[in-house]
Image (cartoon, rainbow, N blue to C red; front, side, top):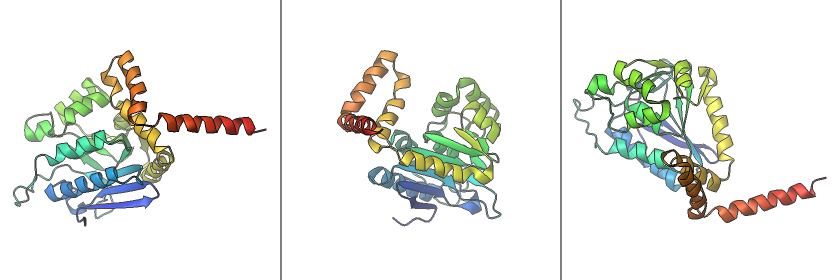
Amino acid sequence: MSYRFIEFETVEEHIAVITLNRPERLNALNGPLLEELLSAIRTIEEDADIRVFLLTGAPRADGRPCFSAGVDLKAAAEGIKMDSNLGPTITNDIDDMLKPSIAVIDGVCSTGAVELALSCDLRLVGQHAQISDWHLKNLGTGLGGWGASTRWSRLVGAAATKEIVLTGKVVDGDEAFRIGFATRLYPSERLWDEAMAMARTIAGMRPEGVALTLSHLDHNMDMSRDQALRWAELSRKWLGVTSNLAEAGRDLMGRKKQEP
């Protein structure tokens, strides 16, 4: 598939980057862009050589950073249609994928774009980040159509979610890190280099082990302790990595015994 509204490339071995690319409209999300984004996500999921991917936005024409202003509210008036299932499908696909996803956020990140970021495994933000959720303000309900209220509250807690959604406040990079939305906070000029360094570290891990870990972490918080322990045991068997990991452990122990 050729891409017009996103950029999608494998920038290094095992590392892919998706860039939302409508800078003249603050990378706003319309139907064609989301169709391209879904295609890229499905390609990543099916390509065994890709082990981690980063999601970011193209800078504005003047060079200022920008993730995305969210769904393009002018698109309908312009006759550009959007399948209502696209957003939920994309966010759930990202959330469920057993390959790590890193949202790299600086500048504006609002509403629908926040839903994309929330579906990622990790979120790195720059100090110029301006994060907001205007579902309630613009649409009359703060639930969000792509899982916003559910993912917000699971990530940062109900109280912080209420403040963000009920007031429509803009959260800067420092606060995003403080409340737990952001995994890391970096000066804007270092953000991309740090994101790539993290991606390289993850890409260097055993992909079977990464998939196993994500599968367990994505489900164990909804279980009792005993259920989570049992899930960990069963996950190793279901994903077929028990023998591989055991062999790796034996190899490692063998090398250590041979070391002086």
